[in-house]
Length: 195
Length: 248
Image 1: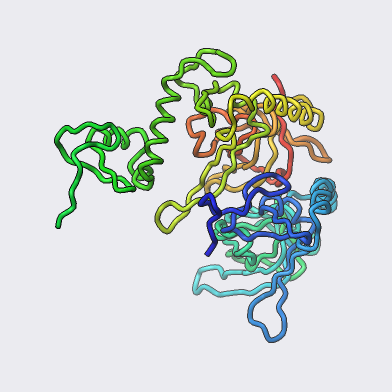
Image 2: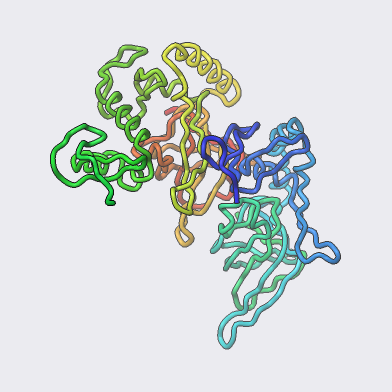
């Protein structure tokens, strides 16, 4: 349970980067020098410092590994200035507005005459994906059209109050990106692109 | 022993007979004051406020409505000026004087309890902490900040920095671009321009969705946060992008 501050609000004061409230109900990113930054500022540089969840031996829960927590405030500000150039490099490299890389897939049959659920696990490299988005699956040079059925994020605690939002953002891993379509070929290593 | 309800209204002092309503802080108000609070503040809001808060709220509102001229520039105050501001020393600023300082005193949006088990957005205005004596130096500070931003972003009608882009409705092809107006103001119908390495992209603002405290505003003013609704594909806009509205 988040605690109220002396004004009766649920925040830990202003963000040192943008001046907005660092709301204590959300996941707060603490930098190496102890400064707390708001999720909006974090999501701006997340594409350069992707978040990872690692499974350790003997533990059931995935462990969160955030490279942004190793930065100091000056390094964070410098990263914010470098991000637009880095994003342009990624756009030039892939030639699309948003790219998701599939790491593994699982199929769940749904019964007669209904297409199966194709659940892919992977990472959004940059850009964002929403439910019902029209995308393309790039597989060995060929591309097929597909529609996203559902998105389940791995980082449900990352945005706290916005955890229910079913969308994938650049630099964040996804637990599931679900498709439900007949004759759709997706495999590990394939790219799902938009725009 | 039963509870004794005082006959005198704690707000207006009237002792006319009739039902009394209890306010937080063990005070009782008459039917007329109860109806006035329902209209001016709203039942849900005033029932969660204590008596002192209600009294301060009403006195501030009276002060804003009775003042005829701006305490700083002397201009006549318009009745439908959404941005006029009451300062700490109870002097009233017109919308033009108040909003000229917004660039350095943005509204602090945070979260508070809604009185039950939920939460709601709270807008804390740092301008309420200013007095009339502070206005000249804060305006000077704002002018310097504006010059700095013009040097950084260029001289445009408006500059908007994106924080997030979300789909408005899952089936409809409408997106909400959330962010802050760094310079100027954004109106409905403005064309947003974003520069990418391969060229420029343009999008027309279909609707302005200002925050709750600016609900009636038809445009998004300088220094405020809000949503811009656009239709069609916006996958080329990312958090951190600078959107520019050109002068016509």
